[in-house]
Image (cartoon, rainbow, N blue to C red; front, side, top):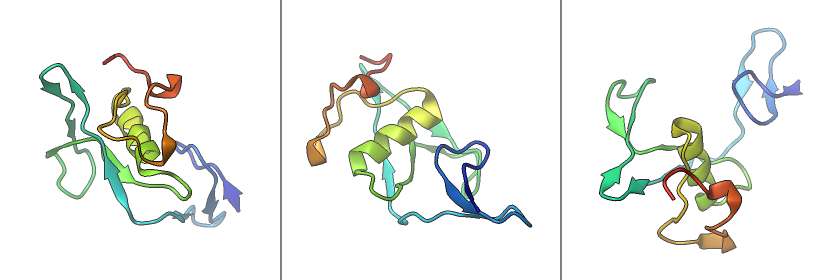
Length: 105
């Protein structure tokens, strides 16, 4: 059955019997380098692989999502921050969009 699993933000195919969630997304990973002055935002991994290691905000892209949208989504989801000025603006993404404004502006 299609529904939004707990902790998610989009519909997924979820088995009513066992709760298995089928993630239908490309296996492409995006990340964001978020800076504020001379500081960089890093995340400490809480899940495998490499639990406890430091990394940039990153994760899998969703279907029909641009790389800039995916990077901004992962930065926001992991850290309550999103890059306000990506190094480049592929696919016509407006870097000054209110949805990309953050406390690091």
